[in-house]
Amino acid sequence: MQLDEALGHVEGLLQLVTAALERQDGAPPVDEAVEGLRSCMVAFSGLAQQYAPEQFTPEAIQRMQRISQTVALQREHLVRLGAITTQQAQALVPQQRDAHTYGDVGASGPQGNRASVSKLYHISG
Image (cartoon, rainbow, N blue to C red; front, side, top):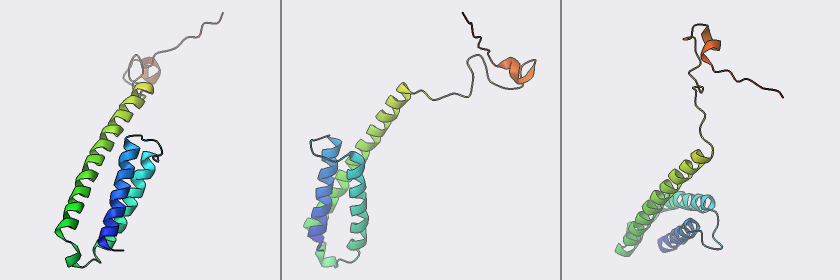
């Protein structure tokens, strides 16, 4: 595979990730698109060592720089999406805390563990 073909393949997968991030119709889920791009980049890094230095023309170098910038932007976007998703999940399902409503469980109370924990009473009726 020639360098131009390999770069074209990487650019195509970048466009697919962009479409997935923008939730365009027909785009795959983000995780699938990102995994495909990651696999492609790993394969490209292995192939790049086999290319002759003269194949790295100024045009090819510019393409690689654009790819690098696009990957950096997409990574930043994914980090932001991850943070938003985490905040939304925590709002829906708060994390459990180690402390009980009326104090920590521990032997610090006058009667040990049992005295420092609030008691819930069931009223039947």
